[in-house]
Length: 65
Figure 1: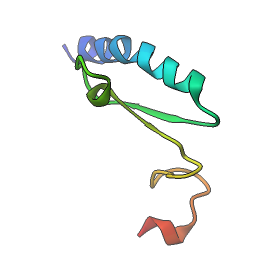
Figure 2: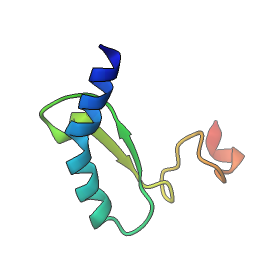
Figure 3: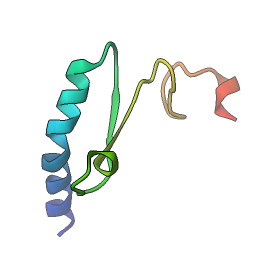
Figure 4: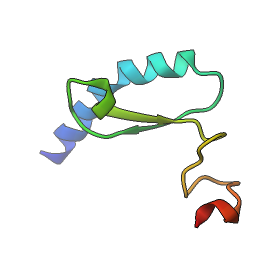
């Protein structure tokens, strides 16, 4: 059941993620969140150069608090 949900999440979000990545001007971090008919709930795209997540390498320690 869990594997089927994970595969469905990837299949549902992949076309939207590829469109966003093609239009991007640099690196993007894509997080797939759920199976949902709307793009806003299906995935989150972050530009690590401007808004790096906590775990991103090279992020300075001042930003982690």
